[in-house]
Length: 235
Ligand code: SAM
Image 1: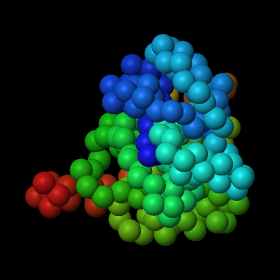
Image 2: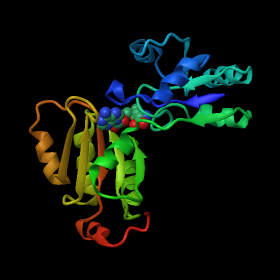
Image 3: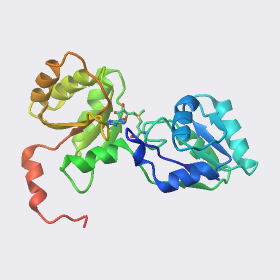
Image 4: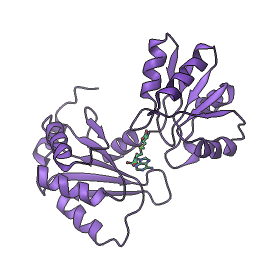
């Protein structure tokens, strides 16, 4: 049995009771980074064998699948949030399913859901692109195609590249594109910035150092967002 277990994205109190129970009862915890997971397990007083799961190493995946085939129960975790969401895990899940192993996915923290819920922009559809490719041309194309669907577009970005990404958004969709930036969600310095992309670029340029983790939400043009007053078909 393979359990997919989300872990906190910034506040250890966000672990669910079920996640803790699952970690306690599993035979092994499959980790993106065993040292980071060990810190989490120790914090909750859980002593459990861990094994590294390396998505890019076919042998690693095979070893994990063999373990499951031998009847072991494994809990798959990543360094933060939900495994498989811009994190390792999907190849293992795919191969486990193919091998007839039961997979259960626990609900829990994920930066995309957390940011969207606090954005106050939609109760319905969105497009999640995760981390975009490094090549500006490819990234711009993905942004433009996603935005053409007329739903908010959600991106993950590192502090080192966030200004560059905002500049690319401005170039691709226009400087007045409305944007929400959620930084350091559920951490002490949680911060929300809202405005046109050109305003946010200016604001970030005044900072001496960019720090933290970022979720960028590209909102629809104001005229389209206004239509939100119409009855929502989703509920
Ligand atoms: N699996 C994780 C999830 O479910 O959200 C995502 C892991 S991905 C490697 C890490 C990226 O998620 C960060 O670069 C950032 O874009 C976003 N992220 C994670 N934690 C965050 C936080 N506390 N605040 C804002 N963004 C966060």
